Image (cartoon, rainbow, N blue to C red; front, side, top):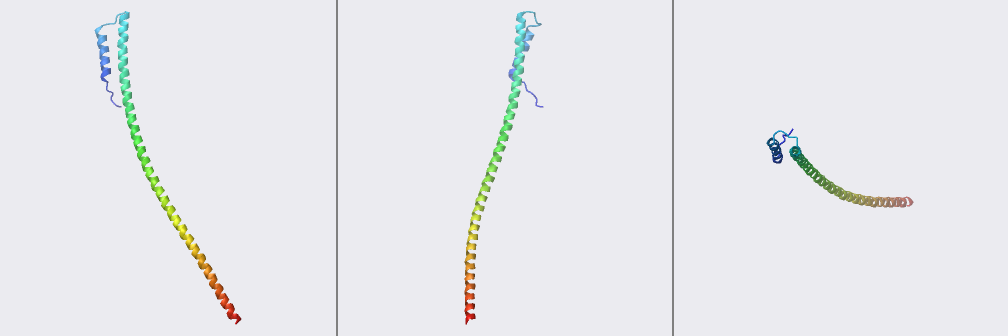
Length: 137
């Protein structure tokens, strides 16, 4: 648990309240004495509030620092993910180019295969024609 350090303002308020109470001796049963007692109590209450708000400010400052560190970490993660996304996009573009190239090669190969198939059918037809002519002779 962190040690609490009393602020200078709170110490001053307590000192004034203690001085005021010690200066006037034992309480008297008068309105003036009651006002003084209430004034001293208000000074003590203000000192307590000053300490409380100083501690809360320190707590909030620590929370703000922690949140800033968390935001910095999230920003680093976001940048890393954006870089990975960029790399994936580049890979996808490269695969798209390769796919287009391979599709073109497939189309070319298929066209050539059809050409050679027609050529082979033509050759077979010529051989069959030659064989039929030889049979007629």
